[in-house]
Amino acid sequence: MKLLAERRRHPMALVVLLLLGLLLTGGAYAVFTGNSSASAQEYTASDVEEGEKLFVTNCATCHGMSAEGTENGPSLVGVGAAAVDFQVGTGRMPLQMSGPQAQVKEPQFNEEETSQLAAYVASLGPGPAVPEDEYLDTSQGDAAAGGGLFRTNCAMCHNVVGSGGALTRGKYAPNLSEVSEKHLYEAMQTGPQNMPIFNDANLTPEQKRDVITYVREISETPSPGGAKLGSLGPVAEGLFVWFFGLAAVIGMTVWLSARPK
Amino acid sequence: MTSKQHTAEHGTQLEQVNGFTNPGLPEHTPRLTDISPAAERTTERQIAGWFILSMIGTIWFIVSYFLFAPDETMASIQLQNMMFGLGATLALFGIGVGLVLWGKTLVSGTEVAEDRHPIEGNEEDQAVALEILNQAKDESGIARRPLLRNTLIAAVAIAPLPAILVFRDLGPLPGDKMFTTLWGPGVRLCQDPGGVPREDRFIRAEDVTIGSAVHVIPEGMHESEHPLDEKAKAAVLLMRIDPKELNTDPAKEDWGVDGIVAYSKICTHVGCPVALYEHQTHHLLCPCHQSTFDVTNHCEVIFGPAKRPLPQLPIAVDSEGYLVAQRDFPEPVGPTFWEINTRETSEQ
Image (cartoon, rainbow over all chains, first blue to last red):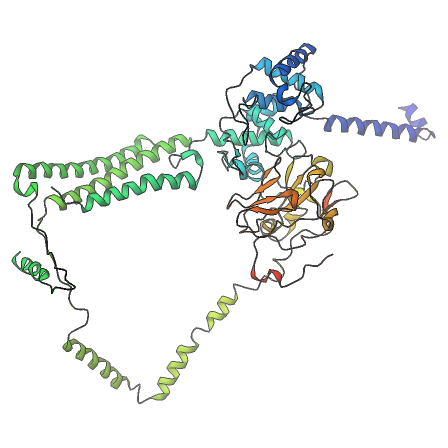
């Protein structure tokens, strides 16, 4: 302490102080802004190697031998492990057939193969990684805050309770009630098909967790008012009334006016 | 019975018009319950059965009030509501069906026609009514007392005047509210977390990556007098598109920042929030009436009932790297209104 007090008016003190300050703020900046969803999972060299083999045999037709993209499929350089985990994990890729958008089907690869494919694609260029479990834990999320974010950012396409809805020219926003927490996160992070990307600056990982919590909460809460009819609003309810309600009214009218035998 | 049968016959004896013969009532055929006492008894029991079903429904409602008392969960409320509905439906439907069945099968089934009486009154009634009116005229002296008559007319005539004041309170006219929003030179773009946020979250240009869609409100919205009204006009959707894909109008060259463009979220058709953005086709779809806007062509309408492109908010980056508005929207946002062309929007 005495030493410090003696030297504090030394000509170099200012320089040292400045350096210290710069280092501190720079370090803190790196700590706080470091890509918060960076590499939740470490991939080994053999994962990448196996992934490349799988890629060449299953994906290269459309995406090119080194994932550089062709006329039939986009480049995968820099899409990150999250995009692969979402597209392959939900069965959207490999694509069943070309059409307005990729269809969900039974996943074609098991978890290990999916992760190897993800490792290979992640090795091609930096991109969003598979999210950490911390951000998928809905017990830590705030469903009310998530509801606000969902209604602002998601509800216009996915419907206010996540039942999905139609887009232009045969495309649609899917129902979210059966989608896993991880895939919900990855969809927000990578923007599959025509969905916009919600990067960490737009929706922070904590906010993404709130959104996921809201989706879970809303799809698990039964409706006190009776059958939800898919929560599709006036379309489903109108159809029900049109076919069943009107049929009942017509049937009663016919019965009322019929002569008894 | 006989008097009614008489009217029924009377109703059939109409003059022949245009060659059509009134076929009259069809021949009366007795119902099964009229001729078979056994069928009558069965039907009686059926009707009583419906009434008993109604009673069961009512009792079920009361029982389920206690039996399915809801706890904290939505599922228990759903169950109780369903049981209430079941009980109430049985209770009312049973009474209704029983009554209709009774009327159709057991109440006398003889056909009856009843003539309408003429619409005009008879001469005697008309004379009485006229007399009453004349008497009122004489007794009130309205013909003899022009002062009273004229002041009465004047009083009635001006009685609606207060309505003008009351209806005036619907105003004042909106003034320039339809033409302006909270956006102005240097107003920073903030993220919209839903509702009215208590603090602003500014947006850096670098954070809006290609393919992103950010929902945006103006800085300081929460400090305005009616924040939600202001939000309804000023809501903006921010998108970043590869500049190579944008067909930028030379006159609007500097309205975006390196592919980042901001458009009003309020549909020019009837004002729904247009925010269904497809980041590969760059179509913006309105969920209400499917108006579709092409973001690469300054949001021109490519489908649907909207008539005007979505107004673009000219944006720039300030010295700290945050996105700011260059000025307010150059044209009014939202649906077209009658006075939309009454003023030139100022180029600031």
